[in-house]
Amino acid sequence: MAKIIDEVSRTFSEYLLMPQLTLGNHIPENIVLTTPVAKSSRAAPGRFSLNIPFVSASMQSVSGADMAISLARHGGLAFIFCSQPIDEQAAMVARVKSHKAGFVPSDSNLRPETNLREVLEIRRKTGHSTMPVTHNGQRNGRFLGILTDKDFWEFEDDLNAPVSDFMTPKEHVVFGTLGVSLHDANRLLQKHKKECLPILDKDGSLRSLVFKKDYVDHMNNPDELLDGQKRLVTGVGVNTHDYEERMPALMEAGADVFCFDSSDGYTEFQKEAALWARKKYGDAVILGGGNIIDGNAFRYLVEEGGVDFVKVGIGGGSICITREQKGIGRGQASALMAVVAERNRYYAETGTYIPVCSDGGLANDTQIIIALAMGADFVMMGRYFAMTIESPTPRVSIGGRIYKPYWGEGSNRARNWQRYTNRGAQNAGMKFEEGIDAYVPIVGSVREVLSVTLAKLKSTMCNIGALTLRTFAEKAVLTRISEQSFVESGTSNVLSLDKDIPREL
Ligand code: IMP
Image (cartoon, rainbow, N blue to C red; front, top):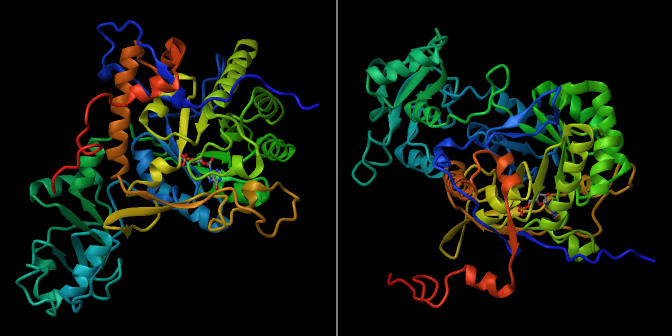
């Protein structure tokens, strides 16, 4: 007969944290959010940590190279999606690894005969207001000058006139020569009070641009995550089908952290793939397993497969319909607490610490905070990052508001059959979907959304009297709330501006 677990399967919104003693030194400035990704023991410290506990989901509509660059710059990690050909995923990794913060290849280039109307169109599409002019309009063409939006008046000048009539010609442009250090390039920008410095080779061809705003951004990003060669770090998703070809290609491209992208990781296929990777690369590979929802699966992946970290969550994702379609899953809070409890037992027994990632279903900042308080070392999010400017999807206007498409890897659109089948399954197509195709509103840049979430997290940590995430989880005391308390958690007995009383337009 089937075994029934009597305990109800719970989710994050059913809990609240109770403040603990806050001392004078418990202030946001003293908090360090460093958190482990690789397993560690007293004898062997972890091989990889994050500076903030956030990673982006291995999904087509979330984690491309731009997301990876932006997250690494803020101290987190993106898992570049594996539902694409191996060479394309490896090329994205290579783009992140070659991203020289400071020297950027020019994406929007003009020919001298391009007219202003076309310039406006390019600006509308890319948001770029500074564009180099090269003889052939290519990023490495011979440099002729530069056009910024200060050089012409959109509503006064003749939009059919060519760029050459308005650009600052090369002889009046301050430029750097290939080989100049970033430090010297920034000094040139400072000395000449410029926003952008073109870098030319000895033949006068454009090689890259250096922007003042990138310098400012760099100074504002003390959490940036770099590898031993001072390159930005990135994670990648892999599957249990083609790992023997995919993992070597991604290793070669420079990927830092690997994670199986599977809706159900409690399988022999995943154990075999993990053992293969460990045998081939030893400790040089940092490898996550999942997704799982209980202690048995934790023991299996850690003890038999030797993974570094585990990822928890089945059926909680915002675009996920797995629970409805197949009847598998578990409330995310219950799943996380079960795995964290087993992790803690395993640590007490062996002295080896296995980081736990809570994946999916985090609907707001409060739930992120509760997941970390329940012992997640870091959280993976799809929707949260899909809503940012850096996600790889185009903007769409619907009813006068701007959205971005966001679709599940188990949707027909993603065609990621591998995530839902195991090696050997003859699955040429999908018989039913486990994810939907949706839209999410744009909320800003990764920097903007993270800054709010981090401020709230740090403020809560102060309420609990914790300066590190480990202490936060150790000290956290949570209370379950009734449905009535949940209602009370919002505003109550007042009319809220916007919600109840529309503002006058
Ligand atoms: P979100 O942060 O709630 O949007 O959830 C993102 C997570 O949902 C991912 O990291 C995956 O674990 C999971 N996921 C992605 N695509 C699908 C799908 O199509 N069906 C079910 N789960 C999915």
